[in-house]
Image: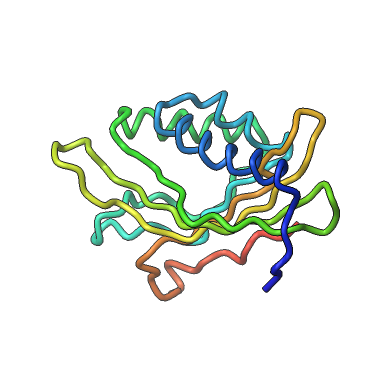
Amino acid sequence: MNWGFVPVEDERHILRLYALYCHYFNHGEAENWAALFAEDGAFTRLNTGAKQHGNFGNPAGTVSGRGNLVAMAEGRRDMFKGLVRHQQTDMVIEPGRDRDHAIGKSFILVTDWREGPGRLAAVGDCATEFVRTEAGWRFLSITLATLPRMAPTPAHDEPAAATR
């Protein structure tokens, strides 16, 4: 475990990215959400959410590049109807390989209000890489693993973690 710290001002900007991620995604602002990523940014879901446990059943896989991230967010906007909420919690931000990179980890909690009273839809772990760009700090990659995790089988093999 790296116990180092990024400069306070960098941490403030990165924490804002986490918050804007939730606000933009929850309110269907696909373009703004995708703009939080570097041009070559990626979102990886390591496992399929188990529908029988109340998850959405979103597929495992990686979506790369801003245009594809916009399309993914638009699809979720249409599916969620503005009634699903994401919360990032317990963010830990550490130095990356140089002053223009940082790594983060957090928990994600998703609640679904589409059928009246809210229900817990997903809980997971996020591993995040950040990069400083000319526009400021951006997500380079987000890797999400939700609970419960089904044991890999030939029909449900989990892809390897994304690496950069």
